[in-house]
Length: 165
Image (tube, rainbow, N blue to C red; front, side):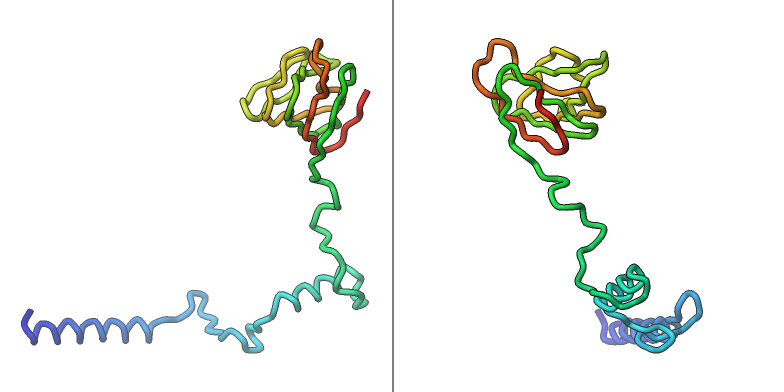
């Protein structure tokens, strides 16, 4: 490339940069600078403190309280439950089970069943509950039990409420 062309391209690029730099104005036309009284910069701890004061009725109070948006201790806790033969594990509404060992069958008192979220199908009363599948119980009165003829316990991971009959 000739030196004259190279200099021309450099001058044109510098000119474009100067134009864009000088024409750079905010879209809303406000032209405020961050950190000024018109647009203050605040820290997360300051915002958290102000929120706590507002929640406590503006009286200051302790800003080291637990965050109210976090779930209560144990709400999503997974428990390993050993179910003996002859017993039925009845889920509360919204509870989830995963059969880890043993042979389980679905137990329901109604015609509708339990959602197998892994395969995307409904399991009806008496159907085998597959191992390592996430089962969701949409309503109370549904659960699982040890398959007839099995003598060992059934191990189930449970997230949510349940009762054993």
